[in-house]
Length: 445
Image (tube, rainbow, N blue to C red; front, top):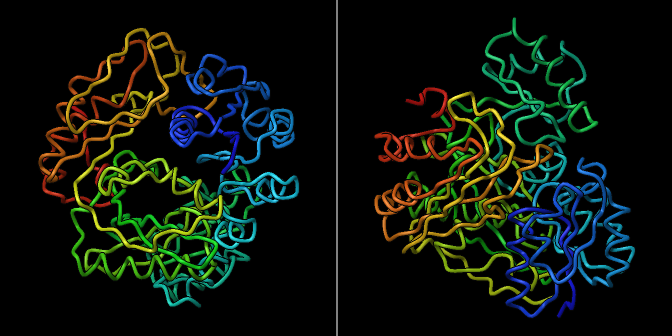
């Protein structure tokens, strides 16, 4: 059993980890930037250490500062949360070198799935379906044009070290290739310090469906059902749900088996997610693996009554998983409540929350670090919290979500609550008729 876990993160995920640790009898150490000195994760941890200035590079991405905090507080494990250093192989290795357990996969596992070209090659060898495309990085515009003719337009250029839609461009015809190639490489280099890009066939009208998996050090891997993350804006997820309204028992079995194959191919140890694109004919293709806990993990927790953070910690302690695959027993929907103005192209809205009333009642869960008087800093992700509704059926879950959103009052900053209220009333959404392109035609009224 770990005695002390340092949480190398902030906000709602840091608070989420603290809660599970407290239930497990494990003490916690919060780290924080000067901008986060009044955050709830700092208040609820057993100890707290300031690790730098507001900018992430000076605090939450500053490995020497985090390791120094772990050393002076005698932490025997570090939980990275999501984002920041959660998928940083160097950080995982440094923790290992200092005798501090990194609650996540090994550096080798992170490297194998962190680079998308390597991950795709690994999946091909494991027999997991992948999107047709090139086998390596593109070396020139000429090479990109030649490959695009072979694959067939439309194609998509992707940063090999990418994420969040950065370094990604869809190319519909040859005349667009040169500009798209140059822009994708420039953006990838600026975002990830790696300008490598590769090409895949662009899957039209896709759904984004991911499978939660868990693996232990003894070679056992299992899946814990799927989440549909198709409601997204500029490749950023806004709504997630489980089960997917597109899913059938047969498709779940096939995709679940593929997810287990994918994780088993690298002897994966921890919780993680295998992400797929699924076309309208139910053909599915491996997209990427997230070697960490995800923002939307709580959706899965609600439909199978399972604490994924606890499972992650137990795996890190060397405990075996059950090996059981899970199917959803309820229906859960999550809305990300961001400090953004949906009437103004979702422009960020940092500032002080002057009034906050959070909804409650049967079937409602909120994971949030916000409170009345809390100042949302402009330096980090704009998410205020996650609102989750769970019920016996999808229709009931949508109705519960709409009721909860109607009770959610946040003043002082703009939020995405009005967007979610309108989405819950949208006829196509309620019928489950949507793809990743859904929001391109969605208009706020």
